[in-house]
Length: 298
Image (cartoon, rainbow, N blue to C red; front, side):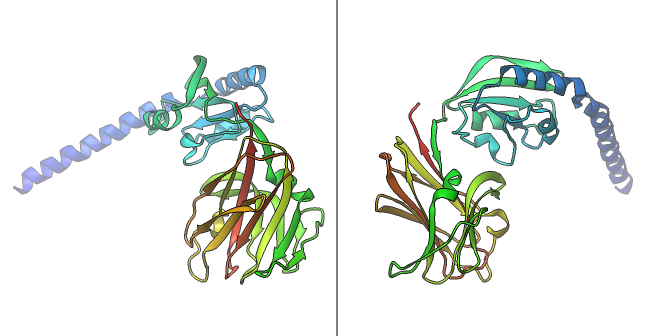
């Protein structure tokens, strides 16, 4: 019995060793040559259009970023396969399908709905480049993060009283020392162009108010900035408001919630007044990324 077990163990170890050897011999075949990256960069430089974006597949193939022409956005983070990329009418998918655990099937399941191939895929060694029309895109009319400097920002009490937060050149500085500003921040792995707001605490809320051009639809997304999303001890839920011409919607951001959440807003008439606001009883680690957009029609 002991000899039989030893033989089985020996066979298993030999099989593992052989598998490891085969893997090591095969792995170099997935290498991407410098010339292949440069060839992709040449195509992108020649054929890119305003509003294009490059999507990396798998998302962790970061080396490709340094070859993408300057000014062309690159997206690659956990979950980016399913990103609507609604600001981008065309998507360049740059993939490395020969990599171990590339997950091309899972990628296609998440990515392909509402996308249409434009032309044929091109291969450059182990790189594959395919252009898609993005049926999930909408023309961007307004990004609230671009309006921070011109907006009115203030702390608002439950009785409607206000304390202005004056602009200091980099953000609106409130009397509690907290600042409302435009920043790129991560929420659940994804980078967002945020209006960064910090809850003042108690019954007061921080408000950003501005007027808008006409738009067919509007939306507000909000979530805790990455390093604060998992906070539970000493933290309280937060309430987010999205108000258009006095008609308000709200949602709760719970403690320990690391996701971005979205409210769909109404069409906007020229000169519509929009207010976005944040409240949390305990302001500890209650720093929220707001993304308010207005959209046209395709």
